[in-house]
Image (tube, rainbow, N blue to C red; front, top):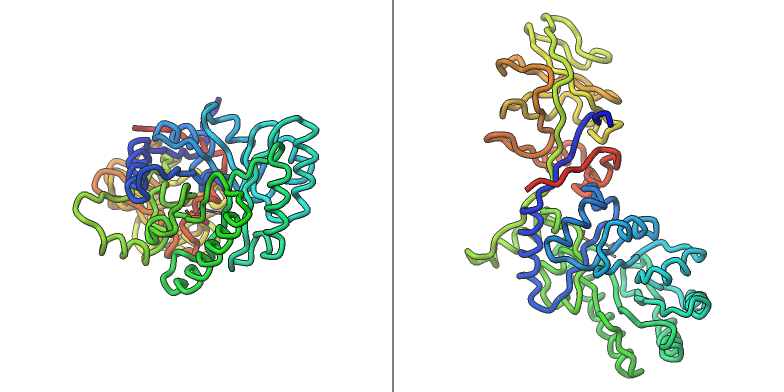
Length: 384
Ligand SMILES: *Cc1c(COP(=O)(O)O)cnc(C)c1O
């Protein structure tokens, strides 16, 4: 196989440390569901699932049936998969057959699920997602009671695997009133389950931010995305952690680094323009290194003439526009740069580090947005 123009490395020890940190935060007996939607937030779903299992995770959440199919191939037999989002009606049978758990947020769906479960002679594993105030997906209040009656009647064919909801903005303390309201609603729904004497196997409402900052939102399971990858959900949540932390509390570690190597090195004389247009004009005689990737490979075009890469542990500033498949950096101040030299795009080299957040400040992208856009074709390699 020929080489790709860049590569992503994933640190197993950092992930294990993050999972242990989150476990400690949420407490014993709480199951962690590793949210691996969007190609595991760009980390690479197949590699990531195996790494997470090594770190002690045995439940995975995806946004779609399509992603769940990938998890199914990568995971071991003892792990479970849950679809939180799109599952087309024609794929319900497939989900049941493969023992995949899935959200239901319309009453009408239940009869379809029942039909498939009966046809296959196998129990469906259903999480009822309830509407609590995010107005995204979620069973409307009036549909909960009939849904519970339905589940009770057909217990032999449908397992009431979970009752869940999702907070609309637990990352920000300014949303606290909304989060509180949503949680209150959820508790009312739990009461209704109790009244109907039909309790879900698992109760789960917390994402990273809620699990880290609002301990009372932690029930039987937490759905952890961004923080397992080593990112604090927001400055709010990070500051709260710092305030609460005692010395033994540890920290989150980035597990991701992105590397390439120098494709060419060339001299540019004073007054010449570098790359397309007139975006960068050499003000002195320069040495420039060519990078074999560009915006089509997930490197944001907004980094043009801004930001830098690391070569020989030193910062090499980007000069000119990010092209589709190339960009140039200034290495005038770095001695002995040769073709094939390792380049760090994100991550650490010697005493310097480039964080995803340094990109996202310039590009206005969210950390998760930037990461999840990295092409799946970039090879992922697990390192220590
Ligand atoms: C993405 C997602 C999560 C994980 O959120 P993080 O903030 O990344 O931890 C949890 N639940 C649902 C329903 C989601 O869509």
